[in-house]
Length: 204
Image (cartoon, rainbow, N blue to C red):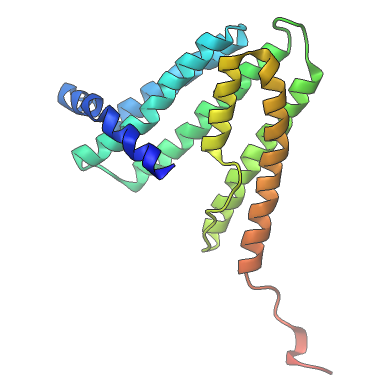
């Protein structure tokens, strides 16, 4: 994954340079990417899965550009990292919203199984992120995780590109995997935290 990111950064370096020359700020790039992912959610909701996937990929590309642009301009900050992380979750939420709308009455009618799997995946995604954030709030780190945001987005995008027949199995896998990742992180963090102190300091 690290080598892939390095290769991708090298490929988009000319785009980052062009954005810098045009006067774009990292925040403007982040907001643009978020708006594009919102549009992709609307397209997916209409049943245009392939088009929605391509638009979502375009919006996701901005997620890489804003960080590289900040490093190029020397404007890396905690506020920027915070906003970028929040925008990532919002972009993922737009994707799930589009899928929910689609399976609520798109081609093939209502698919209750898919809707249940989407709900479970969303719950798993939220709790996966929450456990890590809560761990950092009590002074611990939590970098473990079988299925994190990158894996979720990649798998969903592949499903959209392939078609409806592939989406439900992928959602089934993600429903199980995201909840399992939450459990994995809970066990990992809880094992590092001190338990309650014994009462009375010893035997009565």
